[in-house]
Figure 1 (cartoon, rainbow, N blue to C red):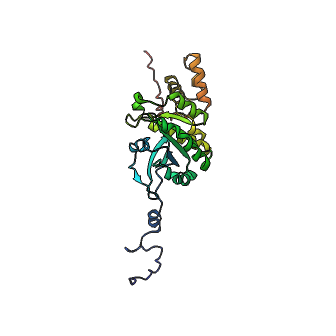
Figure 2 (figure 1 turned 60 degrees about the vertical axis):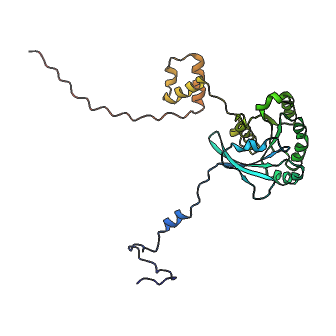
Length: 279
């Protein structure tokens, strides 16, 4: 007997099949399963600096389309994802207008920020002198947050008013990383965000991601390949130079992942060998 609309169907016996209107419990479990995240770490980054220093230029060529912030009309919000040692790091980027009346925005958003980009224009000496004011504001409301000093518009170096050495010494004095970038040439944009992300992750105990990526030399690549292809103690039997053999031993002792060996076919049973006696 079919149940009327709005009523719960009676439980079925173990051998009966579910009706067309009911779905197995496994189907419901799959339907409500949460979608996997598209990132491994999430960091909030704030861009501060005077107006017209080009903060929006830095963000405009990054992945994901920028959108106005739903919380305040004086800032622009954008998200982008970078890759650090195989981990996906999602960056929430907040760009303020840089005007004095938006200092309240700095006070509000710097409390939850994991990284700060202080931006100035290398062709505008006043924008570099104002970094002291922005740095004081940030340190007041977000002490200890990693910071990166960014000199924007490097493609206008022929109009430079801020020497690179002065900015580098200022960043070292205030324990900041330093980059000169050019959105027009796409130079050092992603590198500055990667360095800030490493500093923020190191502050939270992620030292493995914090270390800078280095280009693997040909010798290191050869050593890794030799260790992965050499089974057991066969490394000692290879005719290698002493320096290369020593480096291969260090890779082997560090537990380099061995290369999976293919199963060799078992040899067929040896056939009896008959000799014919000469008559």
